[in-house]
Image (cartoon, rainbow, N blue to C red):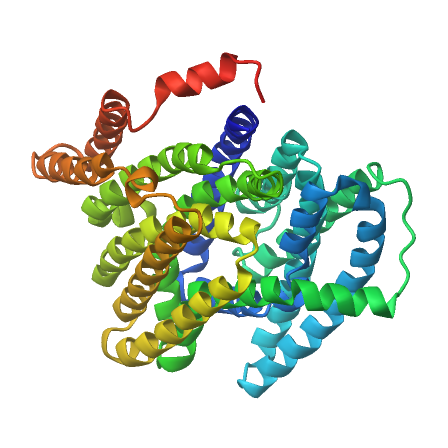
Length: 481
């Protein structure tokens, strides 16, 4: 399993490292710089709002379907036909609830107009994830790797042409950004649908009331877990926009730092895409997971620690390098969110393992506690500290949830904490923090210092065997799956 995991991870991460950073820092950041923090904050808070109720589109069926297909691939045709129709019915519920809640919250006609397209985008993105869950369930990881970046490649081309192609004399509008995303998502959704069809023996969608309620009942715990996780991860920007007089501007400032959190945590998310079906099959076949857990932890968390700690130290120059206008609070928010990154990333390993085991109810209770804590902290901290308050709420919530998940895995799988989080990891974190502070205070150019710090940290990780280079090479050259 290590070879299957590692070889497919290399392809998935490589494609995403090429495409998604350019999307985030080349396109998305440029859109914010061109349109301004207030206009982008207007979009960002609505985008976060559309994500909060995204679970109504999914109802937990994507993760549930992935788990089922990875264990019983022969069910693909029946499940795909039935679940596709269920997803369309759920989309109607999502639209009605989202628009109704937006009206209750007093969104303006312009906000509602943009929200309609963001709702469409969420529907299309959710469909793509559903189609991909069938592909990964069949362990076709290379095909899924290409699908994982296809929408972003199209968005880069479309938005790039409008931004830099001189196709119009009008200033770039935030609405155009959303419309072009709709087009890209639509094209990829059609392609992914056709691809899954080629793997099925038949496609006959029909409404089966018994199947419908059975799926909703069995996937409901997955739905609640996903909803609660989305709430405590995304609610900050919505609360900033709603609670503060200059809410759109504050949400825009928060988005500047959140963009890096979203970019870096994507690395950890890619692990979960491959690990969920692998863990599910290993647990069903009663195979030990300790070796894969430790191997995945080192590959995931060491780069995350390096990026997180280095960015915390260089938070001021990073923000001034990326944005034309950033406030003093922007770098403070970035530092706090990079702390949250470390704990959020661990959840994509330990939370995924617990999900594969079927521990959905305990995870949902944990996520519910995290959501309530996050809401409470935001209500207390946002009026007083604005964006910094929201960032503190995120850090405390992610830290609490991350540590509890580690303890849950240790207890349920009887894996000692020292096997999951080696003691050298703490020493390593302290060493790279010290070297980073020395480099930062040396007067070296900030960009040069940032890159040197990352390079030295990676070298140190290899030297003390926290990045198991020899094991990685032996896995790749071995014939064992």
